[in-house]
Length: 391
Image (cartoon, rainbow, N blue to C red; front, side):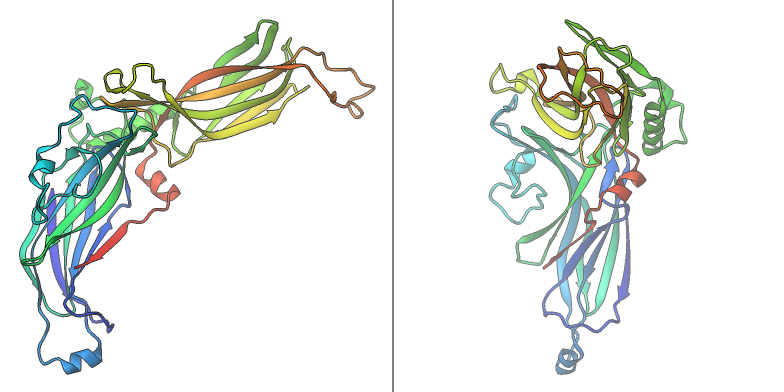
């Protein structure tokens, strides 16, 4: 962790209320990070300049002061009624120590759930004094733990990350400024891999990017013959099994050798949220399935068709913790018919039948979804990266 500070005077002329200090936090690289990456945030404390009229009425410079300021990153986990913690009544030592006081720095104050991860609090300063128009900035730098869970907003479980800046005037309550982060995890990057230990010059972030590129760049087409009790419906080809956020899932449907007519098909990208067996409130709870991108096509009498299914940037890649696991799949629905396509006088005059006897068959195919690189995520998702509070 690194802290740097600078002091400068703002020469702009703007009106501001007296007896106030403005605290601003700005993320250097934006709000999206990989576990193991360095988070950098500029934190600025300002005593805003007063208007020329108020300055003329004042005989002395207004000096504002803060007793101290501290900063910390923490991950908060909240659950709904379907989840029970193994130690359901256990609170963290931090939460117990600050339950009845507003004079202790507690990043989790006022938030629901459990603190499952927190970095060491860092003191920015003690006894800061700012004259009118003066600013002082600090660069807060911290490494996100590699074993951290990802940011996740599921149906039963939520993981959320924040940088919390706490500061206080003398004899006043603590003010908190919270800066949300989105943290992504590369699940196949094992920290105990002996091969990784030889890469002395590479940072965990560089290593994670390499793993992402290697896993998601491999193209190895897989073919699947989809059949029902009456015969072959279609041959499906998926060009690769692993994808990054923001990519398109591309595949082809080949009906050339089909013996069962397929009237229409539907493909849905779905997530499955599974609560760990020891954390289920009811033993028979099944996974929660959420649908995202959809592809639909009427394919009656077609020979070939192509699947293009975008992966949203805002979803959470697959992961697993002691509490919950998330997996991804392609859900297929094929509407088939027992009828044989009618032969017309020519292809120009042929029309589909007005009615058909149909039945629907479903099939699920697992896919692996990984994070994108920092630049791809920052370019595709617009999110606020600057926050402020007035004391």
